[in-house]
Structure formats: structure tokens, C-alpha cells
Length: 218
Image 1 (cartoon, one colour):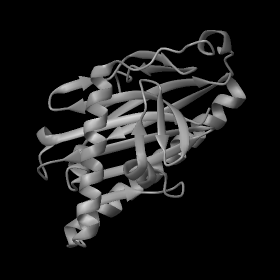
Image 2 (image 1 turned 120 degrees about the vertical axis):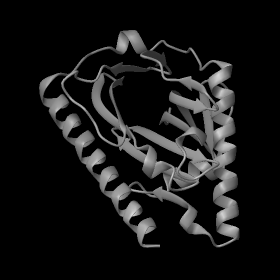
Image 3 (image 1 turned 135 degrees about the vertical axis):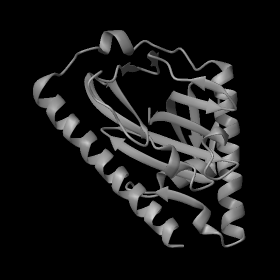
């Protein structure tokens, strides 16, 4: 129990650092480097390919089943859903339905979406550049002189509505595989960035599946 609580505290601290870092990047970006890419992104209607969408649906089903089973059996310690912005992660897990390659409905609310990353049973989708639903995303290379311990770091440039955000996302395997389900959401401008990890075997990253995506209300 002590070990579980320590891991939870560590995860929360890391997420808080992530959110603060993202906020600082946004402030800096607004002051230093606004990019007008509306002409590039506004007419984009390309949806996600069926393969990554199918795996995204599978991860969402696994996440929902894990949450509902844990709640029914009163085993809330087997999942961790961090909610800095109301209950968005939980609402997404419980009520999201993918309509097609560009639209998802959560309850009665429609969102446009773009998938940043899917890992499911050795299928690994993490594009360097992608442009969907008026959102342009570029995955930046990590500095060669910077190393990270215990996880992986992903730096993104996300452009939407004539604004460009510099966002950092983290994948920390030993934390994520300490639970059967972890989820968190960042809200950056009008964008929601959702990260979900499910695993079938604790403390084993080989069984961890991941879904990262951006949602925006049209």
C-alpha cells in the first residue's frame, strides 16, 4: 500500500510539472513566435487511417471495461485518472464514441480529433507530422545532449486557429504499468490533449497499450 501511494504521488507530481511546463511554453510562444498557418490547416479534412482508429477503439474499450469493473468491485486502487480539468478524462473513457476518422462524440457533444500516438500489441503509430481537422502537429527531435531517466519525452509543435503551442508529453512506463489504467488530460487553449494507458499485466511495459489524441469542439 505504501508503494502504491508513493507511485501515485510521483505520478501526480510529474503531471503537475508537465502542465506547468506546457503553460510556460504557451506564454512564451504567444510573446515570441505567433505563426499564421491558417491557410495551411483550415481546409484540411483528412481523417485518420482505419488501422490506428481501430486500435484506438480497442484501447478505449479496454479502458472503459477496466474502469467499470474496478468501480463495481470497489478496486479503485488499480487505476489512476488525474483530473486537472473537471472530469474530462473520465467522461471520454466512459462516453466517447468514434463516429468516423475525424469526429468523436462524448455524451451529446461532438468533437473533432487527431490521433498523436497509438501503441497496441506491437502496432506503433507516432507520426512525425500530421494535419487533420485544421490542426497541424509536428513531433520535434529531442536534443542530443539531453537524456531522460525512467521515461520518454515527446516535444510537439501544435498549430490551431493561427496559434502555435509548444507542448511536452511524457510516457513513464514504470508509473503507467503500476495501474491497469492511467489517464490524464491537458487543456491548452481550446484543445484537449488526452493520454490513456491500459495494461494487462502490472509492472510489465510489454503489455502496455497507449492512446494519445487531441480533441477540439468545432
